[in-house]
Figure 1 (cartoon, rainbow, N blue to C red):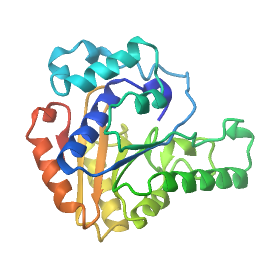
Figure 2 (figure 1 turned 45 degrees about the horizontal axis):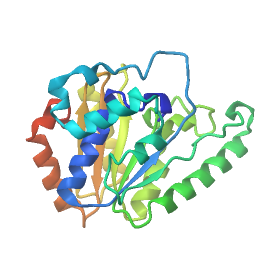
Figure 3 (figure 1 turned 60 degrees about the vertical axis):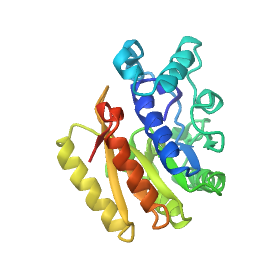
Figure 4 (figure 1 turned 90 degrees about the horizontal axis):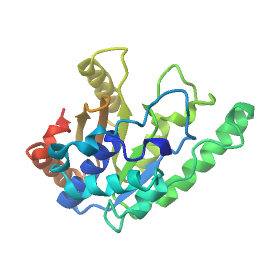
Length: 249
């Protein structure tokens, strides 16, 4: 996640989903932003046309209005999201930078590993007492082309980190940005197989697909005790008007 993306159409999809799950399940949510320093090599983060889309606004009017206010006031930061009351008051937010701002490129592999391990320990601690954890990396789940010691590793959530939150008893919602290497359906199948391999005991594994702006997955992996409520909420969400921007896979 980068601050420059706050308030774009991807944010609308992610917070609309989390708000709907919270309403349906009453589970306490912990948001873990994999906050990465803003880049400037492209025009990403400018997908704001949805703010002029009255039909989309009707899917979640108060969320739409809240994000519009952040944009209008120039408050594009995750900390502004946390302060805006977009999610329930018992939500926790973790906004520590996932990469060392002194300059990851100057750090050794060992230094990056130590920094990331310390970051993860704090992130896990921030989620204590919350049943549902939302992992929000910049790009998504790890890819073979970016190793753990890479300066770009902060853009990804690694499987061992997902496993740490799972082992702590949290159900999970995980953001993943799709790419152009394969069809949407093929990428979904590959990811589903990876989830099944790593979390064979998960009684519930589903995803929502958001297509506006660019294609994104929101993977939902439920612990046994949370599975009934989450399964019911997922089906209800898929039958509401939110299906216009969130397709159940």
